[in-house]
Length: 249
Image (cartoon, rainbow, N blue to C red; front, side, top):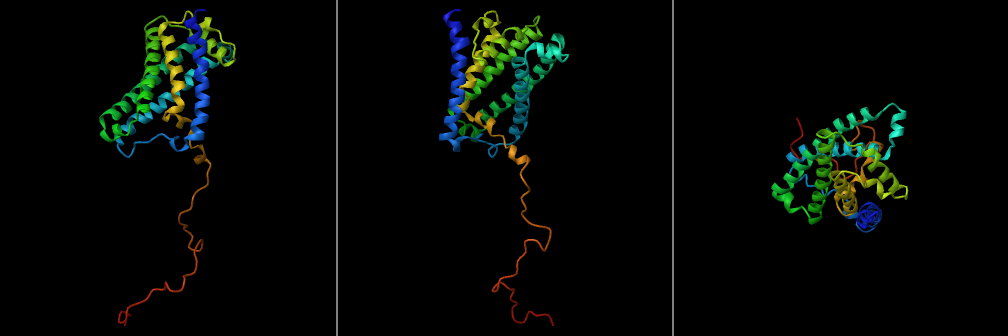
């Protein structure tokens, strides 16, 4: 194992994990008022309504596909009847659809950020860095899929990248597993690792603030339809006073 392999496939992942965890704790303790999406919906809504759902639905599909492909061993999927050919066919088709949806949504959001003046003014340097990191991770991932899974003969990353990630999470890193991985996949992994290190310091922290409580909270009664509920007697001094001479004859 070379020094570069040790840095890329051992030191960098653990450094990114440490920054990811400690950074979120620090951000929550010292910057709770900044723990927000920094929504710019008030400045422009049309492009946001088109790009935001596409990006969020696509990125959820991408995250789900990565979780299954990287964290679930192939033997487990074989045991429930999802064999190699079926898995790769589904991963390629659904993964390509998710990638197109995510990239299209991201392009719309970046275009909106750059062309709508109020939104551009509200965009911070960290926002710009976040968009670059997101674009790099998604771009290289899409390139790897197109180059090897669609146009090429296919690459079984479940025999290399997946065991490597599980070795990192189990604290038994095996950098040798990444030795024969195609360059596009390697760059995608590095770009994604850097994105995770950047995550706590950007608006991406809102991922951990999903308003799930809204699903179970009770209704808030603003005005009851029952005339006898919540009513109270009229306070003295507030009775209606008629002007002299206005009484009906």
